[in-house]
Image 1 (cartoon, rainbow, N blue to C red):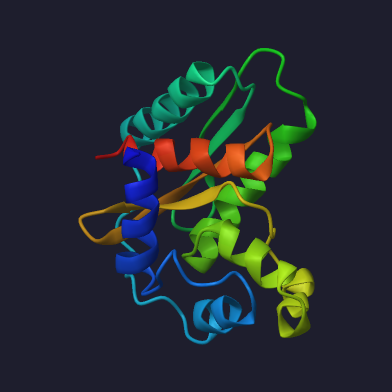
Image 2: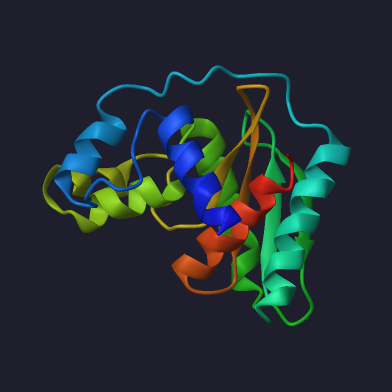
Length: 172
């Protein structure tokens, strides 16, 4: 329940969106019509990155999911990475790319996924350099500013997104 509430707060406050919007073209237009208004802050510290990753790993363990967790700074550069035992190796790069996408575009990667799923103009996102349209990347916000992002891979998109939200909540 706590993660669901955080997802709503992040989507509404940080990006001016409501999580309850449809996932079709209305969301795609609202999400990408203008850059997010959230300002960049100082890059996340290693200590804070480890806290976010630990929260994500704890959530994955609780659910018996094998995950790779990446934390990047505001420029999308890797700060911290952890892969749980027996996580598929293909998830390593995906977790990093999800975090990088979320930091560079200041949006959850789920918004890209939903825009592509909506078709039409949303399909243009498939060619957007540096963007991966798969749930699991969440911006990290401290004091109202973007300090980095968390990316998670290893499960379904919903599982990855859920685990990434737990990582973001770990900074609070």
